[in-house]
Amino acid sequence: MHIRQISIFLQNEPGQLSRICRDLADAGINIATLSLADTTDFGIVRMIVDDHEKAKETLAAKGHAAKVSEVLAVCVPDRPGGMAEVMAALDKAGVNIEYSYAFAFHRGEKAVLVFRFSDNAKAESALRAGGFTTLAESEIGEE
Image 1 (cartoon, rainbow, N blue to C red):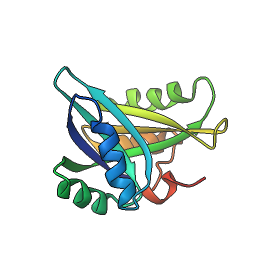
Image 2 (image 1 turned 135 degrees about the horizontal axis):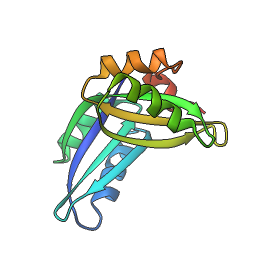
Image 3 (image 1 turned 90 degrees about the horizontal axis):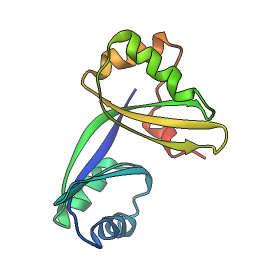
Image 4 (image 1 turned 120 degrees about the vertical axis):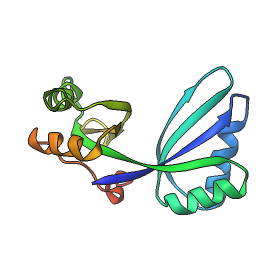
């Protein structure tokens, strides 16, 4: 199952991330998770929200450059070796990972690994063959 993620390009200066978070909050959009990567001049915020279409519209109206892309999220036990097992399944299939980030889900029980692959279908098949299940968008924000 693919999940839609919002990627926002920001100037690397104080207050930019705060402004985006406030704009989404004011629009009633909940951020389930986010990742921030930066360079000297700009940053890329990747986030999964409860309404990606509304988020994209809200951000565009506020002058932010944003795009939607598909990622996969897999739930693993929150313990040493959980991610290593996922990596083994992906390595066995020769899947290329473009980027990844993770977050705790039901703290102490599960972790969620979010991936952008060069081939999501191949990655999903590899994960399924390894005994892993990918999450639906509706499952990301659950408590």
